[in-house]
Length: 113
Length: 113
Image (tube, rainbow over all chains, first blue to last red; front, top):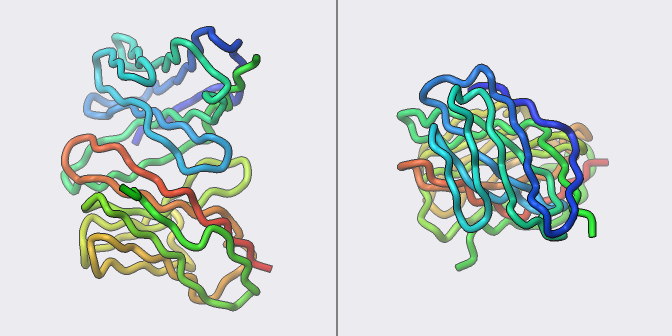
């Protein structure tokens, strides 16, 4: 699976959009981009994933560049409860179906009142 | 719907002791896995299973055993605990088909003295 690079930390003002970047310059054509977050010491929580097209759900939007070498997770109106570590992961969905994810160290997002 | 349940939440062991970390899910997920998380690091995959009777090694399997006798349960065994196994352990599950998101438990915090 391709390696990802994320900034170690970011701050965002409450109510503003949080834009979390991820670089995955070695991504291959059949690799998906996934985002998870981990609030305090809880288990990671799935946010969103995509292959080529931009995606949006009730939690966030995922913008993938046309060359797929980078992506941005957008939390449109950050709240204090969005303070967490955000992980960007790329993986191939292989034939076994094994959902093995390889986590990096992520970006620690702090939402400031 | 309980999701992924891990027990115990906390455990202290002496070096050389054995124990089993329990993981159960009630979502009829075929895939289950165990991760460990050390301070300041991302999650690392220990073992995984794509169905009852099938297990395989992940990134850091040494010192751990698993079995999958039922779809619901995926226990992790430490046969002879070592201080290097002090960590937070997370169990996760998902469906095999499609890009099914991983559901995580809330973790077991293990200290080996």
